[in-house]
Length: 88
Image 1 (tube, rainbow, N blue to C red):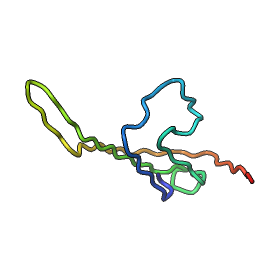
Image 2 (cartoon, rainbow, N blue to C red; image 1 turned 45 degrees about the vertical axis):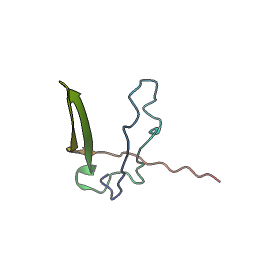
Image 3 (tube, rainbow, N blue to C red; image 1 turned 135 degrees about the vertical axis):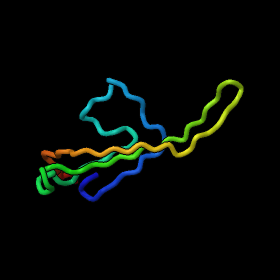
C-alpha cells in the first residue's frame, strides 16, 4: 500500500452500488492509512494491486478452467490528512 502495509482480499468482493457512500468503509475488504504521504518522493505513496481470477467456462458442449489469470497495476496515491480519534 506504499507505506509498508499490505492487504489480501479473498472472494468476489461486493458489487458496486451507488447506495454506498464514498466516505464509508469497505464492506468486505479495505485498508486504512496511518500516516499522510508527506515523506515519500513526490508526496505520494506508490500503490500496487494484483487481481487474480480462476475462470471456469462452458460453451459449445465443452467446459474448462483457466486458473491464475492475473492483472497488475501501480499508481501514485496522495494521502493528504490522517486524523486520530480517541475513544475509551
